[in-house]
Length: 168
Length: 329
Image (tube, rainbow over all chains, first blue to last red; front, side, top):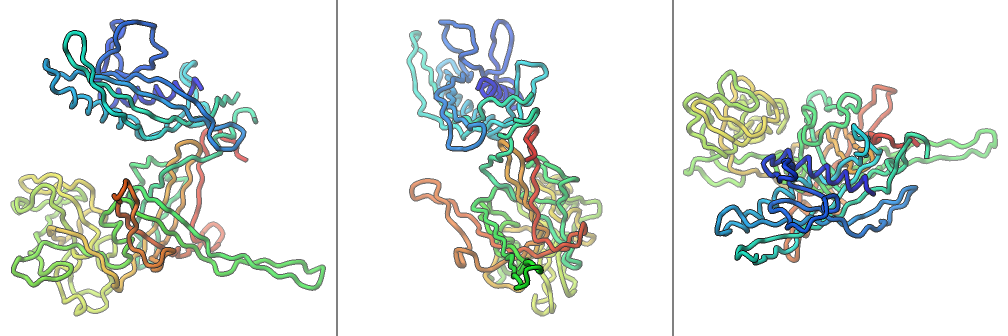
């Protein structure tokens, strides 16, 4: 399962880097594509970054497929927020729309190879992962303590993969 | 599990079917060949020439009409005999995207470019007397039409048809790709623009320069023929009826999301007329309550070819590109 999570994340990260190289965040003084897996980050009470995608994983259930290896289906949630670029934050809705567009674009095509990233170079594990078109939930606005306003959204994707298959 | 292989990779998972068509030489009947060894698992957005990407389709259904029959003799030592009868195959599907070639294939007969017409000309169902063509100059390519100063008569986003003047010739007309068959010049009114009315060499102007038109997509027939002219197109029309029968090579590819890629190659597809839904020409695909997308329904009969490998008669080929590490059986 970990390989499927890693492969999903790396596929989206590489596509984002290619699609929009300027969409980056700073982490420990290093610039990186603005997409990360929440459970892989250092525990922190600091607020989440603006204009970045946070991936969280949810329920995992087997599908009705039959075969030696069950085909699994995992919920993936992508969360992102923005306050726009202008001081008044009046463009926050438009900025959220750009984040929506980038997300839809990096989810196409809706599949990738499943790879083992614990070795270098990464190794093909012999199967693919694929996912549903993102469902964008209603945007929500939040008033911040300093009086500013931020707007955020959850997007939901179903990720399909075979439980680990590691040919030796 | 056998070492080094997976059985999970043997299950092709796909949601969408992509389709490509390529012209047939109508005079010789020679199809365009899809060679799995030569063309391989090509990128879906970049098909090998001369295949034309016609986008995603749905409700794909292919039916073998070949029956295997047999009989047994009364003599125990003679055994049973089996043979194939009524060999044939049909294929039906819905084009989700509308375009010049999609309409032509779904309609099955001549597909007409409605040429920009003289406002004073009489009304006709497929457009009246066309405005004169502008000569395409030598040195033009499939994506750039050299017109000299006359390029200024076109604007960005115009649709244009590019082909030769009709020279009162008989037989197939249309440069590189046959668009119609003329039995008698009188039938087409000796119209000098007739070839451009039926040609598949149609493009969208993406840019107008001082002396040329740049096209967003290359002309299906390639470089314009010597003596070609260009005219503005305002719409496409097909008809219930007509005398011409389209015939094309076809390739259908399941987009492999997990597991291997499956391709269906039909060397020669001709219109089949009736469909399993009767005579439906369009289908509706509901995309929301009360909202439907209109799809072009296409129905074909597979015309057989003789396979050079062993002389066998074949209607279509199914190829499978196993994914990495999948078991063979």
